[in-house]
Image (cartoon, rainbow, N blue to C red; front, side, top):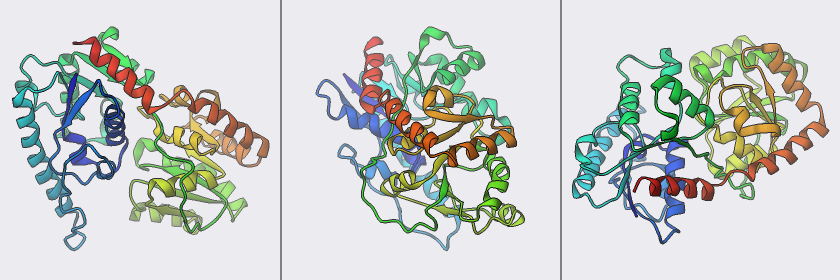
Length: 372
């Protein structure tokens, strides 16, 4: 069996859950003599691919900046995507594969497939459910609908995402298979990291909109005021914006919130040292940080929304993401109760055993085989 993966997500992401997913999938298949695959990427600045043994790509002006102007970064990515798409088109034209698996939702390949089938992974339905987050020029929703109808099989990364696909796109239930993701953070990683405090809550990922960061912070203001040694550390996404800094300044919290861009090794360190990991998001396709917290024995406090209870099960404490009192009380209950923290750590390690990239790859391979 020969699988062809395209360039899309590796042209877009340096770090990110989707590129991590495809990287881990290919890494597992690289160990399996029954499967061969090609990745049609000529240039990429993706962090995970940089450490792979199966990609022959080159970096594309990775460390070059033009007076810090974001415009250059956008243009660089556009040029890289153009060159990579030419590469993908060449690979598709050769027809030297059994199954095609695109890594995102552009439709450029439909006229090049011939009789070859393709499998589509749908990560979430955020574009369809939270419309005001995206511009009217964003073609993702339309492309996703077209591809979902034409795909031989659809992979959903959670039961919640599958339910949304059926409801919103009208796709038949039997066409969709659920394949959960897994954790890549190694809790045994060794690193040195200078922490501003040894008493903090950890927030991971983007902070905009449905990620619910501002409501989370507003909810815990009394906890932070009551205990000035308590901090919040944010990682991933981007540094605090001017608007966020003003928000924190208005709450007199600038000295208790910190942002860091970190490596996987530093990420593991931050999870291990945190009092708890808090995930207040109103919608997730899966929520890999939940498993990262479990792997690092970090108590998880999650939003009772979308797929998070599906992933966390009984190994996390939950709150209503729209209720400030519930957010504050739930967090307070965990951070003031050592026994509760230990119980969540123990349950998290047990729950983590249900997820692995080996399992993800095996289930994906079964789906490939089912359409040949």
